[in-house]
Each structure stands twice: as structure tokens, then as C-alpha cells.
Amino acid sequence: MPESSRQPATAARRTGGRSARVRAAVLQATVDVVLEHGADALSIAEVAQRAGVHETSIYRRWGTKAALALDAVLDRTRTDLPTPDTGTLRGDLLALLHDTAAFVRTPLGGLLLRMAVQEDLAEYEAARDEFWTTRFAVGAQVLDRAESRGELRPGVDRRLAFEALTGPLHTRLLLTREPLDDAFLEATVDLLLTGIGP
Amino acid sequence: MPESSRQPATAARRTGGRSARVRAAVLQATVDVVLEHGADALSIAEVAQRAGVHETSIYRRWGTKAALALDAVLDRTRTDLPTPDTGTLRGDLLALLHDTAAFVRTPLGGLLLRMAVQEDLAEYEAARDEFWTTRFAVGAQVLDRAESRGELRPGVDRRLAFEALTGPLHTRLLLTREPLDDAFLEATVDLLLTGIGP
DNA sequence: CCCCTAATGCAAGTTGACTTGCGTTACACG
DNA sequence: CGTGTAACGCAAGTCAACTTGCATTAGGGG
Image (cartoon, rainbow over all chains, first blue to last red; front, side, top):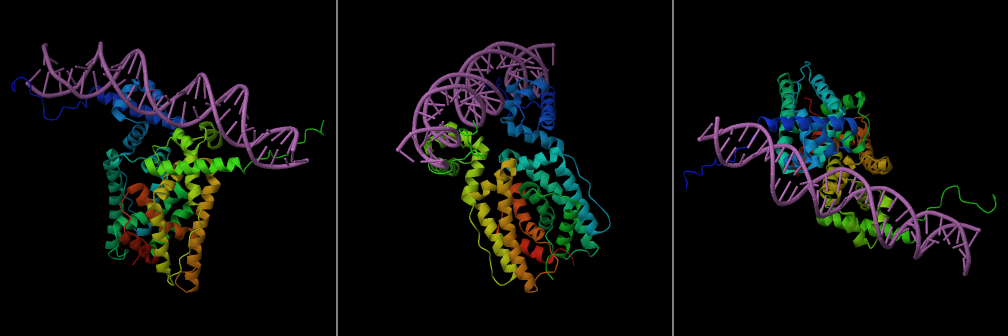
């Protein structure tokens, strides 16, 4: 009976209409709850109630609480960030670092980093790659312009330079928990520009 | 009756004998379980059984699973690390970074970092400070010797330099999840030494 | 417009983290 | 050595994450 049972090779997902509404409502409720009570106090039951959705629907779609929280925060974070253009490499790097610091000081931003560290699902590898690729691209653009102005030693690895710029910030924020004041950000940029050699 | 009810101002803790045995057995069992099944699969019930201790004793002493895991890993990590002395600043920094990379590649080391990011208990602030202070001290010693050899630009902030050395490594390990190969470690050291300026 | 079925609603159950009250053991101190 | 009490053993219970089987609803392709 190849005539009567024609089913699409890929089982058609239903992404529009109700599904989309449920997804939006749940993610919204999740962000609300997290911002109100903190990430530790995130309760699936409360999210379900606020979103007007049954708990089971959340579990079937996201699986775990961590996955839900990460998806919700990522959804809110998917915004394109501006590329600074102050005219000097130092100014651009400082602006980049200030933007980054401002983001991680945001409740949602700080949460995203901590979740990204924790989460190990292969499912979110793509999201992580996308997140960092867009940020690396901004850094590369800043460095390209600087090189054309002769402000950059040729042959500098773009990715490494960007990691060196934000590395101390991430270390302080996540590990040593030291304050991220302006003096620290400036000192980081200057160290990256000139190095510690004589 | 101020005569009969004389109790010490500080309620005497009992740290020796049985308590010490329980603590050692529980921490040992915790590390064992974590190394066998991973940190996510850590079960208090299993730890209690292996340690020959009742669950309640674990909860009363450590409170939560996260606190237990962090304490267990910290207990194993409390070892003094050697200060490299290769004769050159570049060699010392490279050795330091290699040691750090080797540590975080250890199951226990990687776990410690991820837990340190997550944990927010004021109770462990002292342990965190101790951990980083000892590491900063090693870095400072390396830099002091380099300065006396004229290999260091005077006035370089020791703490910032150390953060700049290990920052990219932590960023890759925890956030971007890129590989920590030798070429990356060398490039990090060279960038720190010379900067990105012309 | 109809029909297949993906996605949701619903109810009941499982599991493990964490709590509590009370009796018991064995350090620590005199 | 006794003795007070901190720390442990034990039992029972709470709570929230997560699961499962089945009925119901509503996309979206035909």
C-alpha cells in the first residue's frame, strides 16, 4: 500500500501557531521568574503556571530545568552588538571591554555565562559557537581597522587577541570574583597593547 | 547557679577521633564517586553507603550536595605548587601555564573550576581566596625575579599580569571550549610578553 | 474543508535531595 | 575515670524534578 500511506520523509514539525505561543510564553515566564527570585529558585511548576501551560509540556520540550533556563536566556541574548569605532585601537578595545563588562553585569548576562560554564549538552554546542563567532567577528573587525592604520603589529592572531582582551575579565568575574572597575578594564587594555616586556 | 553551669564561651567543637574519621571517609567516598560516575551523578545515598555513614550525618555537616562536592575537591587540591625557575621570564611563564593547563585537564581540577564558578556560598569565600592567593604568590615571585634580571617593564601589576597569563586559558576551557594545545599556550605567553602594538 | 498526527492537557507515580525529632554513642574536659 | 554534650544513627516525612500512559486539541498538508 504505497499509495495510501504516504508520509513525509521528515516527520513534519509544527513550529507555528500554538507551539510558537507556548514556547514564547514559557520562555517569557522563565526569564521573569529568574529575574524575580534568582536562578536557583527557578521552579518548573511556577513557570508552567505563569505561562498558562502544563508542566508536562515544558518537560517534553526542554527536558531539564537547566536546558530551559539556558534556552530562555539565550533567546533574550540573541541581539547584534555594535562595533565600536573611536578612531584608535585603544579606544575601540576599551569600548569593547566596557560593553562586555556591562553585559556580564546584567542579571541575564551574568546568568548566561554561569550557565554556559555548567551546561555540557551537545544540543547547545551550536548556540555556543554562534554566540562566540559573532563576538569574535566584532573583535576581528576592530583589529583589521587598527592594522590598516598601522596600530597593530602584523600577524597578530585575531582570536587569541580577543581572548586575551576578555580573558582577565572572565577570570575575575567567574573565578577570583574581584571587582570589575574601570581602572581594571583600562589596565587590561594597556597590558594587551604593550605587553609586560621592557 | 553560676557555679554549676560553666560552659565554654565557644561551644567546643569536636574535631578529632570519630568526627575526623567520618569526614575523611565521606570526602574520600565523594571523590571516588565523582571520578567514577561524574559530578552530575553524585548521589548522597551512595556516598553515605560507601563511607559507612548515615545520610543524615552528611546533610548535617555539609548541608547540600554542592557544598560537599566542593569541599571534597578542595581538600584534595590543597597542595603546594612548585615555582618554576628556568632562568628566563618566557620559560617561567610557559612552565606556569603548562602546569595550570595540566591541572585543569585533571578530572578533579576541571571539576574544581566548574564548581567554583557555580558556588556562591560565603562559606567558601575564604577557601577561594586562599586558593588564588597561593597562585598569585607564585606568579609574583616569577615576575620579581624577571624584573631583577631586567626582563620586565617596571611597574607591571603582578596580579593583572597573572590574570592576563591564565585568562585566555580559563576562557577557552570554560566558555568557548576550544582546545588547549601547546601552540595556544606558547602564543598566549608571547602575546603577554610583547603585546599587540607595533 | 477534511483528516492525520504533532503537540498539549491531565493524572498518577518514581526518584532523590533535604528536613526533623528523638534516642544513642563516644569525644573532650575536668 | 566519670560526665556533659557534640556528633552520629535511625525513622519518617516533605518537596520538587522528572517520567509515563492515555485522552484531547489544533496545525498544516492534501
